[in-house]
Length: 284
Image (cartoon, rainbow, N blue to C red; front, side, top):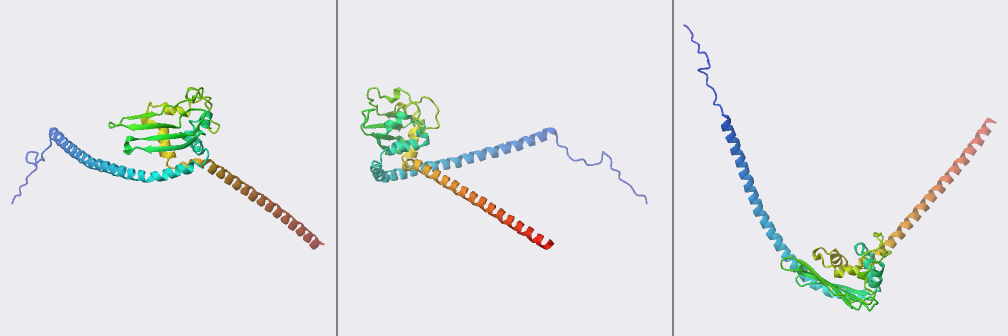
């Protein structure tokens, strides 16, 4: 019986379907489009979530503002009591200003002399805290100006535009510190300028009320706790004394160590001499 063999030829062999370049390109484009669509959907969802976060932040700001207004009223009696006590301390405010690193850089010698008559500083925040605040400076009678009170106000209108205004200073004849420059104060080591503007120029500077650093420093840094700046020089002096005490103790300890080393050397020398005498006796 004869066996028949079926030969595989190119004609009868099954070949896999080939993907054309055009079809592959289309598939790739479809995948990119799907990825872009998913990314866009994710962005839209993130934006929706972010809107919710912003809404909560606005709500939180409103609640915080209500709490701040509440406690601002509660603090007023304590501010008044503190002002009465500060009035018993001569040169309290000028000392606090001189000890503050940012304000001291703005003071020259004549400013410090004029601020010797400053008896009270007061920050008044408006009922709507967001709308602005006012800083009042109270002075005793002095040779520089007629004013008992000099104020500067900062306002923020409904459109968010900042502005400021201040009390005109009634300078006495030849005493207008804003029309002449002076040397920096002795305590101001940061400025090596031969001349600088007066601190009182700040009252007439309304160029950029939204970036008034001095007003912000007084309101947010000094006013909440002026005592820390009044005492700053004393704290530094105490710190210097402590450093001197520590240096003295270290010198004493070093001296004790040297004395101990010298005593130890003397003892060792005596032992060597005794040892030498004993060796001599043994040889004898």
